[in-house]
Image 1 (cartoon, helix red, strand yellow):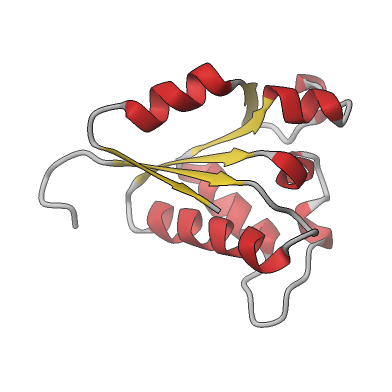
Image 2: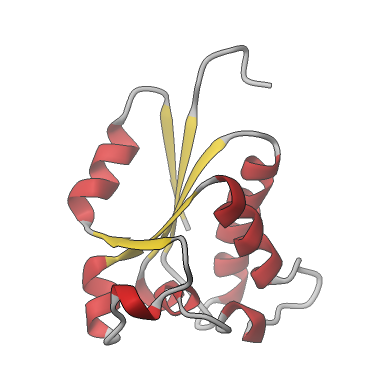
Length: 124
């Protein structure tokens, strides 16, 4: 698909139920890329941090959008999902609280991923 060059897509979701279309766009792009074989790293920041918790993605609804829980499952199956350290702390979310496979990491890790050779970062 990408001409043999290894590429990584880093997607930062900054919205949750507060801006459902923007949230769904981030998850849809990340899951579509993951399903196409792209190395994907989805970052949950701001209100999207809540989707790192079990059951939260199942509660999200947006007409004409794929279910968020299914999109998250696709991304977790082949890529990385990270909750922002500060965003998680502001919501009293710890590593023991999140869905298996979700890590908590900070800005330094995001910058490292976004600046890696062959990486493309998108922020929603």
